[in-house]
Length: 182
Image 1: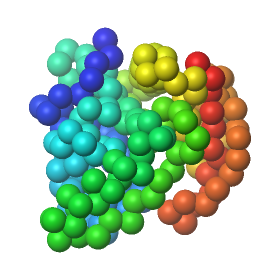
Image 2 (image 1 turned 90 degrees about the vertical axis):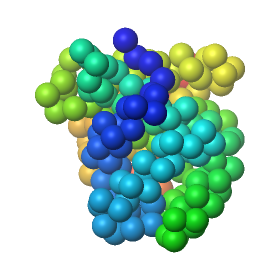
Image 3 (image 1 turned 135 degrees about the horizontal axis):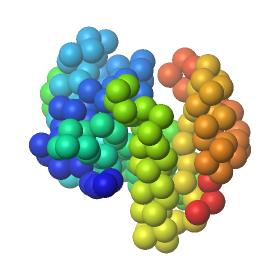
Image 4 (image 1 turned 45 degrees about the vertical axis):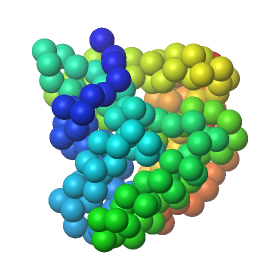
């Protein structure tokens, strides 16, 4: 069953989502992976940041987090990032996080499934739950970015109904901005 993350899920969620974030993880303010994950952990514990446990769904099997998806409303993303920047600054770091979503949708920031559990429909379950959350929030679209370096991932999203709206550069890489109507 997919459910909201809780504080006890922190370490598992951060290790999973850090894989999906790749180099964007370092936008938390440190080029040291361990420090960047520690900063991520602090943001996860808060109630009012983009990377809060409140903005993450998890899939658990036998009590183990095997998948996680981080999301936020695009019309609240800037505000959530600014709050997160204050926390990051208080830790002595400077964030280079940027607004990634646009318009008025529920934006999927990152999605990851444990390697041992891939190809079992977990990513689809997590995306479906974000789509359901969008409906609960009276939003008609879900959006995400996919790197041009990941054509297989883009194809997967297209099979789930996402369509490319535009292309943009972010964190030194070119991405496609994709939207799905829900």
